[in-house]
Image (tube, rainbow, N blue to C red; front, side):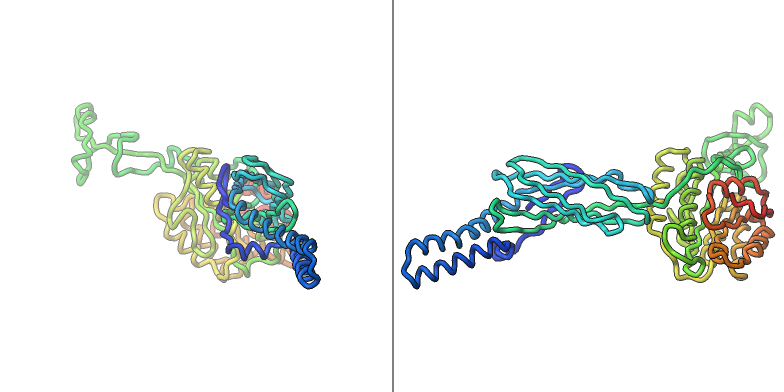
Length: 450
């Protein structure tokens, strides 16, 4: 059974082990025919009945002919799979289309298709095709859905072939499979202006000097030590004194989204857990800042960053190809992010401290779990290199309905210049985001959780 790719993913079925392997595919009916034929032949030999011998030979030969016929024709079936879309949010549906084509000269018998899918996507889809003529095609489809984010393999496709008499049944698997990526749920966020943040591409208050380039040429008076190659002769002739070029170009605003993934910082599991809320909120924040034209990156407590160490993605134009590619990369990362075994935020602090450039790392949005005294102090120091910093704290005690010290943690963050808010169970992140935009840095409105 060969597998092609007429549309979408296809693959090559596993090679059988020969006629002996095909004999192992005899059904109960086929084995009964062989046993009855053998018994009839033995009785005919003992009793000397030629007519009974013919019947016995017929019963034995028929399943063997079916084995040989199926062995010779099973390589002439191709299949393909198309998954649309390959990336869906948690709770969303994707459609899988399977197409089977008989490229042999003989019609097939009964075909049974089964596609392997993880149990979280639902039961394994099974289809029965009565008969596929030579050159014929059949297409079937099914839907998959998951409330849990992750990356899930679809396939390989299994094809069960039978002969018209039901004597032999062979199962072969294709080798190709697709991958469905279930990303966190996101929600649109209101456009708010965080304290100290610049517009997506910068404004007059946030411009940086460039060492080279012809963008925004602004002449200034020559100073001792200036490179003579930067002399602007037209301005020199105009002003009557030596002028040099001062190239300026807008500085893209940057945003860092910090996700605390420490196992000790959260309690509970499942779609409604605090950790899943934090992952979903981080995804919403990344999409929002990319849509606003920011160059963004994702940082975790382990110090790992996406797209890479010290790099920011997107920011060329809101909604442009670069932003879309950056969003896809970060969503794929958040689809599989899990708890870390680390106990502290030191690595994330070191990654932020390593930022360079005017304005440090721009806007910092952090999602913290439980913070003890040491980690609260560490988180407070992260604010130093950021133009603006917003923290959403998901205290496990608050989510469990137990007495919480979250206000003390928030006060310490606010004293360091953070805009800090507590996240109660079931809070709407869009409302918290709006509140963060309306809350001056270093202050907090108790009870304003949306």
